Each structure stands twice: as structure tokens, then as C-alpha cells.
Image 1 (cartoon, rainbow, N blue to C red):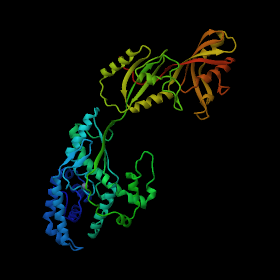
Image 2: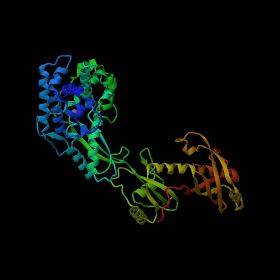
Image 3: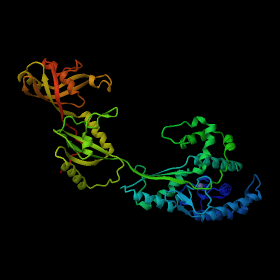
Image 4: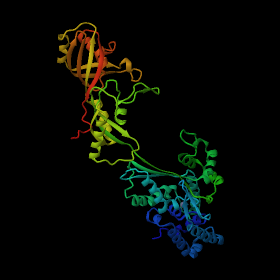
Length: 510
Ligand SMILES: [Zn+2]
């Protein structure tokens, strides 16, 4: 059913004769159900023509004020003829992705600049879908985002003022929110076409995003008068090529008075010669996360690359070894890891394939071993971080004492359980952590006597305990400490993390 009613007729006529497309006419008439927008353009034009033709006589009679002028009917006919004639115009796709009209007479909508004409028809959607297919991404659903040229907002504003004025003559009002947004209408038309063509649903939460950016060079200057009138709205920003962003333009349009706007910009907006161009069609996939557990064989290998002021301090890191397929390492340490894979094209893996990937990593080096490799969610990464905070850690420390000791001097340590210690922020980390006193718990210790000046201490502690400081005391900043407990000066020669007791990621049976 044709969606416009008798009371829309004057507005429809006015817009059509000024060069506005049928879908934009629907929008300004507040048509808020989807079906009419989805009809093919040609059909819409002929339906609109029939609708306006059918009421021609009534139209003349019904206009109370001002009295209709003959010229308006002529304009109406011209408008319809013009759009129908040009509706036949074919577009062609240029290799760089832009669209050009084969027909130089093609009448581009003066409000949407072609967005609700060729750019929502099946031919264009197919072209975007071909790009998506060619991108090689795997996806189960997608988000489709579009970016329209900012001057569309200016033209929309002009058309709104025009229609508002026309409706005012009929004692009707038109708020901005009564108009269906261009983006909404575009969505209504294109989303079902995408879904059908790609065979997946459109889902705002999807990690896979297809974005199309439109530009319209011919009318770029539409926005410029706003810069003179509302200079405050247009501040240069980083990463922005132009100050005339959509947001800034919207802000200025909210500020400018109707009178000022009309002085500076034609209502209705002038008909453009060209359609929008497609600046880019891009596909991107949100990160996926692979987690597992690994054994580390080197004390001097940091978890992540250690770079200070742009300078690399250590040759490698666990992260790099696992992600780069592993190189040089020593001695064991077990802990969970997770790797963020940015913009992955492939995301579907069977558990068998992940198992094979794990085997491949493990075979590539005998110095690092990975297990429980699996795909996890971003949320699960949070569990790992929490776990690191809350769970206990097990360490092995090689300790030196300044005065000779015997085995019995260390044995009392084995009997200490859940020892509370107060740690002032260590001197070595004061430059990056605030000064504070934190209480930590040493759950248990086990001393292995080595010689008169050395013993190995295994410690199970609350995560976040500064072990080195617990051993040497950090000039009395950690109390008590091994030195004070044993009444010696103690120092730490080696420290290894034996394990982090976190139940994550879930163990897999291999
Ligand atoms: Zn339009």
C-alpha cells in the first residue's frame, strides 16, 4: 500500500519538484514502517507519480493559502518527469570503487545525494558483499556501519526548514524527530539485503564490522558558512582531516537561528550534479583470544617485552616466544597466558585444529611447552587478571647471609604459617607506584640448607607480595623480613616463580 496520505500531498509535491527522491519524501512525511522504502526505485517513482497525479484536481482545490499558482502544477509535472526520466539512468562502477553515472542527466537527490537512490539498491549491496567475500574473513554475523558526508546534515536541515514552513501554512508542525533519519531508512533497506546476500544476521554485537565511507566532493563547501557563524563549534582536532566533522556540524546546526541559516543556505538545497562517491569499503574483525598454560625455562625472560623510553631492555619475552613460535629458554615455571590476535581473518577452529596448533608450538622447541591451548572470550581474560591478584603464588629463592649459618638456624622458618608482613612500596618501584603500606601474607615457607652462607627458600605467598623485599628488608621498609627473623643481613641471589595457582584457563584432556 502506498504510504502517503492526502495530507502529505503538498509536502510530497514540494519536495519532488525541488529534486528530492521518493525515499527522502517518505522520510519527511514521517513514514516509519520499512516496507515502502524497500521497493525498487523505479516502482517508487511511478507510485509517487500516480499518487500525485490522482489528486491533482483535489490538490488544487485543497490548498487554502496561499492560493495555488499554475506554475506549481507545472513544477510538479516537471519534477515527476525529471525523476522518472532520470530513474532510468544507469550507474557504473569505476575500478577504484567510486560510482559514476553513465547518464549525465541523472537527477541526484538534493537531500541524500544519492544515498537513498543507487546506494541502497541491490546492485550496490552486491558490490559491497563481493568485497566482504573477497576479504577472506570468517564471520557468523556482522555489523554494518556507514559514514555519510557531514554536509548531508546541512541539506537535511534545509529540507526540514522548507517542509516545516510548508506545513506551517497548513497549521501543522514538524519537529526534527518527526523525520525518519537518513541512517535509519538506509538501515531498513540495506540490512535485509546484506543478510540475504551473505547468509548471516546483522548483529550490533558482532565482532565483524563492514564499514562504508561515503564522500561528496562537489558539496564539501556546504558546511563552510557554519564555520563563519559558529566558529566555536569547529575546533581543530587530532586525527581529523577537516574541522567539519558530522558532530561539529550537528552542534552548529543546533545553535544557528533559522533566519541566519536561510540567509546563508538555499531552502530547498540545490540539486547536485554528481552522486556520492564511496571512499572505502572496509572489513575488520575484533580481536580473538587464545589462552593456555606454559612452562618457562629462563629466569631472565620477562612476561611481556620490556621496553623503556623506546629502548628494549631484554632480548625477548614469553609473549614474543609463544607468539613468534618460541626460541631460547630455560628452567620451569607454569602459568596461564593469553594472546590477543588483532584483526584475525580466520576464527573458526575445531578443537582438533587447536590441538594440532599446540603440538606444532611444542614441537618447534624443546625449551617451552604449552598446554590447555584454547580460544577464550575477552571477558575470560579478566578472570585471569583477577586470579593473579587473588590467588597465591609459589616462589623459589636462593638466599645469601652475611654471617655463617647452620641448618638449625633455618629450620624455624618451616613452622611459620600465615605470617603477616607490612610492606612499604619498595624503593625499586617507587618511581611508578604510589607510596603505601600494604599487608601481605606469607602462607608457608620451606628452607633447604645449602652451605654456611646459602640456603634455598620455597615460599607460598599471597599474590602481590614483594619477595625480594621480604628477604632483604628493603632498609626496614618490609617488616618483618628474613633478615630480621634470622637476625642476619640477608640478600636474594635468585628468584623464580614456581607457579601461579589460578584455575584458568580450564584444563583440557590432551
Ligand atoms: Zn534522497
